[in-house]
Image 1 (spheres, rainbow, N blue to C red):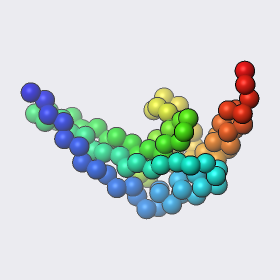
Image 2 (tube, helix red, strand yellow):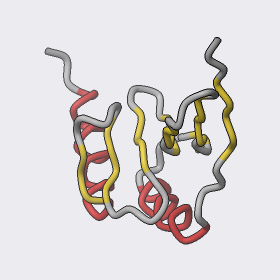
Image 3 (cartoon, helix red, strand yellow):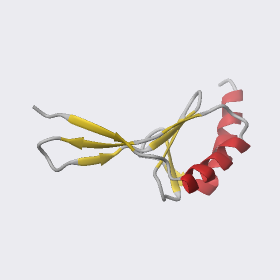
Image 4 (tube, helix red, strand yellow):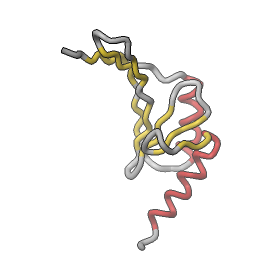
Amino acid sequence: MLKVKKTKIDINPKTKKRIEFYLDKTCKKYKLISGNLVKLSTTNLTYVEPHKAIFKDFMVLFFNYSDQVYINSLLYKIDMDDLYDYIKLKKYENDFDF
């Protein structure tokens, strides 16, 4: 039987400070959740679950020591420097009814 063991990974203080800088500028409420190191027993497989910043209508995923962030999944990435502009655009996008 395969067992999953999760070990919490702390957010690097430098990365956390940088992320919070961009997120606090947006004036939107968010929640930071630390990622996990996921190990599968009886195998040599290990997975790093990313840290998350959860907003009301979307989620930002990020890893320690990385300059990219991912929006909602690992399929769409942007530079961390463009995060504020993305969230600002997302804010106006939600104001329109289509």
